[in-house]
Image 1: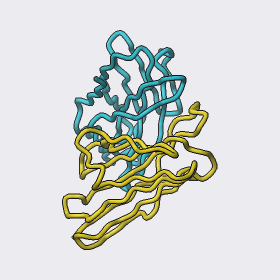
Image 2 (image 1 turned 120 degrees about the vertical axis):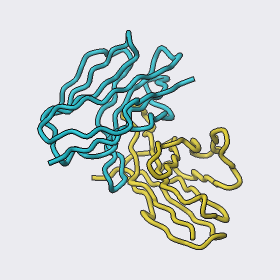
Image 3 (image 1 turned 90 degrees about the vertical axis):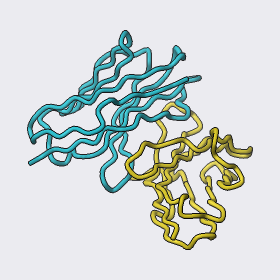
Image 4 (image 1 turned 180 degrees about the vertical axis):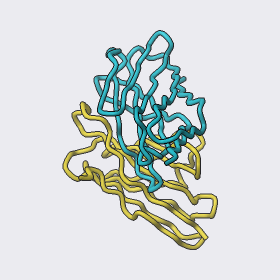
Length: 116
Length: 117
C-alpha cells in the first residue's frame, strides 16, 4: 500500500487562486521531503527540499515566494502555489525519506494542477 | 554537476521482444545511488531499483535486469519477453549518497516505451 499520501490528486481552479498540496508520510517519520514538478512529456525537476522545522531549500530558478513550503511535522509537508497562473499548470509530486535514510525515498502519487 | 542521459526518447517493440533502455550518468561523487522508475499513464512513479555505487553486481528481478558498468558510467535496464503492460515512461535517476542516505534525485529525461501487441 501507499506509504506516502499526496492530496489532492487533481485540482482545477481559476487563475489567481492559491492551491495547497499536502504530502504525508503514513507509516514513517520523514525529516526530509522533496517536491518535484513535471510538465507534460518532460522529466521530473526538483523544486525544493523540505526539512522539518527549518526553511526549505529551493533549487535555482524556483521562486520561494511563489511556491511556499511548510514542513511543520515529521509526517507532513505542504506546498502552496500562490496566485497560480496557467503556466503553473503541471504535475507536482513529492517524495519522503524516512529518518533512518536506509530505505529508498517513497514518492506520492502526484497532484495534477490545472489553472484556467 | 550531476547529470543523467537517456538517449532513447521513444522505443517501440513488439510484444515478447526483449528491450534495453540505456542510461549514462555523470557525477563527481564517489558514493551515489542509481535508480530506475516506471511512470505509467496514470502518472505515479513506480520504484524499480536502487543501486549503490559500490555494488556493481548486476541484478535480475523476474523479467527485469540491470547492468551497472562503472567503467562506462552506465546503468542499463533490460526487459525480457516484453508485455503490453510494460508500456510506460521509464526514468533513470541519480542521487548523492551521504551517510548511506539518498538525497535529492536527478532524473533523466525518460524513455517512452511502447509495447505493441
